Length: 114
Length: 115
Picture 1 (cartoon, rainbow over the protein chains, first blue to last red):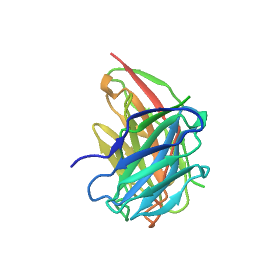
Picture 2 (picture 1 turned 180 degrees about the horizontal axis):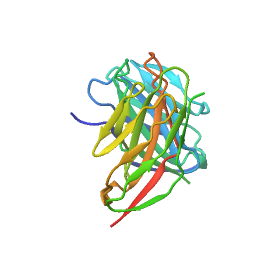
Picture 3 (picture 1 turned 60 degrees about the vertical axis):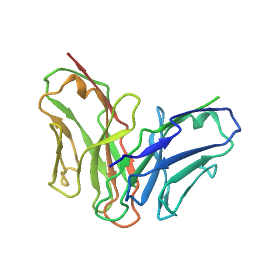
């Protein structure tokens, strides 16, 4: 079974631009979660989508948004990029229903904001 | 809220040494506990998990036991290899209640194994 895939793997943007990251979950998984990983803050939860609905949200500004499509693929958007948005963005998928809540991660998208 | 406290790194060991990475947690309800590993330049891989008290998760020679009385989930391996060099993250989810898929992570412990 194919794993979680994320595109693109690397991105370079400048301040003020916006960016869209994509995540394709494992087949059959309906939940997609997004995490931001930085050296200073570690791994932080952004949001989770289940069946096209945002079910859970972390403590990030409104510049960070996401959506999920009917095929469970998800996109994450960051508008008006800031230098501090430079990070590895990880997507994880799971079945999304108890008790099989184990999350499986993709390789991540590394975003550099200049 | 939920939190995970992990042993500070980095940890450097010789090959075939015994490994322990400490992890304690604070959570309401009945959390599930996980260890994830991150190799250089990669995403996170699930190493093992335990979903209820006294469960032991194991994989690739690594073990961890869910201790509710001490709120701990320490990672152990009897004989480490160079290929075990990576960053290890302890994490929890809030439990099996619907809608609680958020993982809370520890800060990570960088492990380096010297031949």
